[in-house]
Length: 72
Image (tube, rainbow, N blue to C red; front, side, top):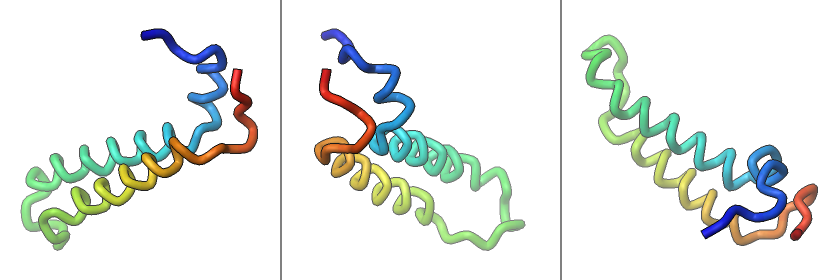
């Protein structure tokens, strides 16, 4: 397995990468919520559900052609 020739451009401009990073942040928030205890009235599973939606959007973004990233 080897990276694409323009991997730097992909990391910088691809929406799929941005959405995957956002999904990771949402997952981290979901893990950290029990530490907040009852201070924040956020339903359990909210950020996990949002992470699922963002990951699905990243899947779609990965297969859609995006401006600014050429196929090399």
